[in-house]
Image (tube, rainbow, N blue to C red; front, top):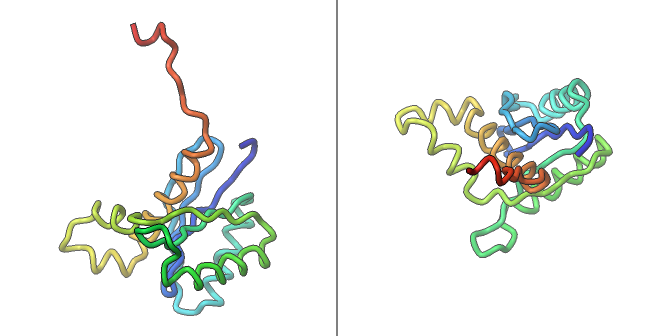
Length: 149
């Protein structure tokens, strides 16, 4: 993972949640892209990729609970192809089942509608997706036997 700088992406047609992670192996949320204009969202995404010198894009993929591709999969496939074409970076697809639910469960019920519009839930979901990806690539830390005594 030498020099890896990853951008986690939770794709939506209105909002794109984002998270950042690197060799340390910890994903942190970034502000979501909530611009009404898709062109502006692409411009902001390009600026982020450039400014953070992103090496890998990690995109949540909408599988159904039975493991088949979800109805949004075609949209995400098209978005992934556009990412590859625009940035020339590897795009890793990560199972995003339950991530939005997990992200939303951390927010008080009464605030969820307001928070959802802000993109906070989307960025938390992107961060969970990215953390899953990083966890799969980072070797687990095995304590020395002496430490356990």
